[in-house]
Length: 375
Image (cartoon, rainbow, N blue to C red; front, side):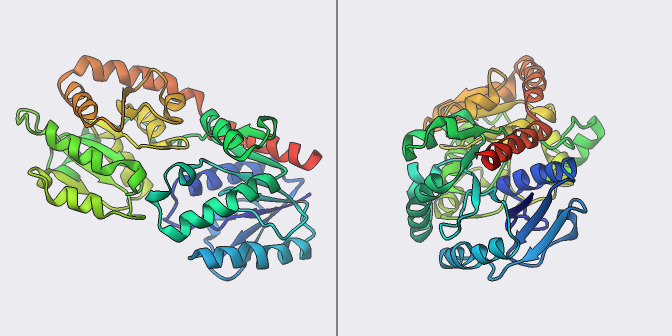
């Protein structure tokens, strides 16, 4: 079989959630199935680290997809010709975008429908593109894979797709995220927060991630000056960050908030392992990999009780309503002042995270590929 794959999100040192999904699943699938050929379709020069095995043929297909108009050109004009030229048996798209201009079977990984429920969080044209094309992609796909039972039900109900055609392939967690030593913790705290303990958020700066609410909750938390804990926000900007900037600038304790920007996996391992707790309180989430990363690193988690996150966190996190600032503040206070609670959450997290692995994700995605090919 020749399996063509949309690998445009495999960008060196720029992997976000879907990029990590793409990397971790394809690295395993290509190595585990040498009997098949994989055509990796990049939209710009690629890094050799993403060519995982000898049965992978990389191909750069222009133009780089940096704008909705170029998304359309890439998927509707360029991809069909490539699939025909190489006689592909399947087109796998880990970011959910498909081509409506090809007869080749297609498998879409649609991680969530945040753009349906919160279009206001996105630039107007991008929200319009998603909400016009993704219903069509969902109907065009031979199967859909997604990363949570919440998203499966949401896709089925929103797009009228039979749940029998949707496969859940939970995300995994990077095995590098292990508990760090006391010396490593002290080193990380000296590097990022002048030696002080800190709450940590990891992820993009995006309205649906509720960074503004996290800042507001932290401001109230710090009104108890006996709790001298900083807040570190690790991640790059995406869309509509004005509210985050305005909230930050108005804070009394803004000097105790550290924005690191994007950090390497190695730095993130140290940053995560030394944190007092992960504070992950988005309004909407398709899965929530940082929750698993924190658990694996031996760090307690404050987590939203919404969308897919209860599936990931289970009973191993301190749940809060992301729309209730006082609940986030109360959780921060409990974590900062109760070592017994922290210890209990860490122990539960170590058990909970074992339910998820990239090996399992890759196996389930391969099963979905096989069902699509045999349909």
